[in-house]
Image 1 (spheres, one colour):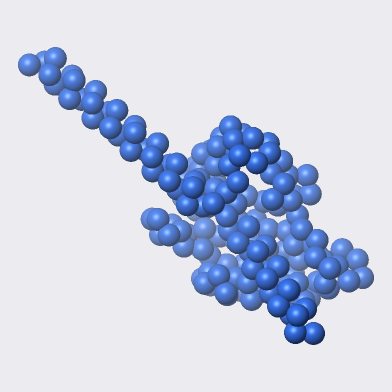
Image 2 (image 1 turned 90 degrees about the horizontal axis):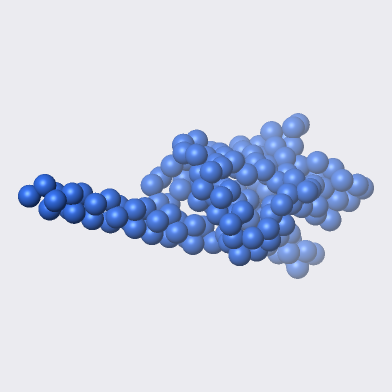
Length: 169
C-alpha cells in the first residue's frame, strides 16, 4: 500500500513538472521572441526564465534590443512613440514632453499581470533621435520573454507609423 502511494506521488510530481515545462515553453513561444538568435538559445532561455526587466542598450547582447536611432527629430519620435503605445492598446499612456518620456502599462494576455514600459527619446543629431526603452514586470522573477516582446512591438509600431507618415508626405 505504501509503495502504491509513492508511485502515485511520484507520478503526480512528474505530471506537474511536464505541465510546468509545457506552460513555460508555450508562454515563450507566444511571446514570439527569437529564441535561437545570437547569443544562442541557452543564454536567451536563462534570461527569459530569470529576469523580469529589459532595457535597450547600444551594446545589448540580444541584437534586437539594441537602442535604435531614427532619422527624424526628437519631438516627432516622441509623438510616434506615444501613438504607437495607443495603437497597441496599452493602458495609462502618458507623455512628459519636457523629459521626452512616454510611459504605458501593458496587461499580459495569459494571467493579466501588469508590466510597465518607459520610452525615452534623446536627440542624436540635427535630424535624428534615439529611442531607449525599459520594460519591467511587476510580479515574478522571469518574464518568459514578455518584456522583450513589448520592446519589439513598440519598435515595430513606431517603424510602421514613420513609414505611413513618409508615404503621405
